[in-house]
Length: 370
Image (cartoon, rainbow, N blue to C red; front, side, top):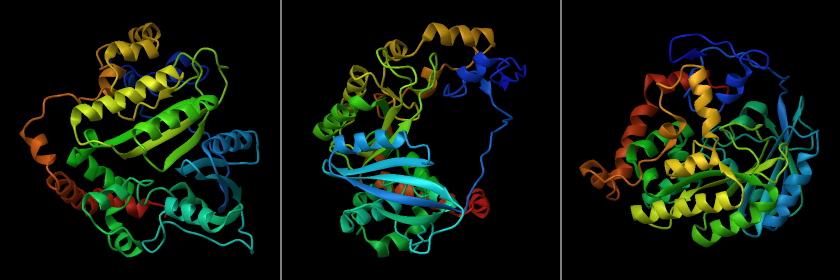
């Protein structure tokens, strides 16, 4: 890591271990990581993917928790499509695909989006079903449609949402391209909720009840999360829970139930307050609405500032400076124009098209394993 004062620090479990752990999740506020040594694991050709239907939030949480104890599982996540319908998705690496299992891909324009495929699988098959997915395809299974965020673009432009339109627009439906459109349009800062919230399994039901009552956004994404030992900027269990207790991340991504900026801010701040009450923490790449004093009530500022002082990083912006949102700033002329439908979305699409045909994106696609 190159530190703010120009010094180079080598960090590991055994050397500068406080910086090794403290810089994780700190948004580059200690320096710039220029070299990594990564521990690899053997790859296999396929992921045997099983879809386990669940019929309630409580059922989903219990099933997820039971599966976390199964050491034969390599991948585990879940989608809830409503209060009464969802699927736990279990993946196990395999060198071969079984003859009686269908092979499935999600990377071609003709392929379904993964979340739509899962929803159809549990609707048509009430029991557990399994299929084989090539490993690279599995790892990028949510790329097309950016999980389900792209569905909002169809609604925004009042475009039919069906296999034909998704196939015709496939070039614009990959996550990198979609995020370019979203960032350029500024709509995500006023109309789209993007929160990843981690909390103990026992508190998930109350958080989702809150989300249903005030947002009613579906699907929701659930993923078990191994906590980081405290002190840290990454999510960790609140006091009263075991330091090694698994957390469950809830992804709430979808259009806000209001177009008013002040209401948008209030809804997100209410969600953050509920998360604090339930002993949870958010991933800081999500929208952040905390005031500075609220933020440092959650994170250990004394530890953070002392570590920054030790490694000469106090001249860099703090982690709060990096993640705080400017959602309540007075809107200028550009913001007012982009907030007029469909001007903001159209501007985002133009930026996305430009990026889609740029040399940078073509290089990335050439190097992609799918």
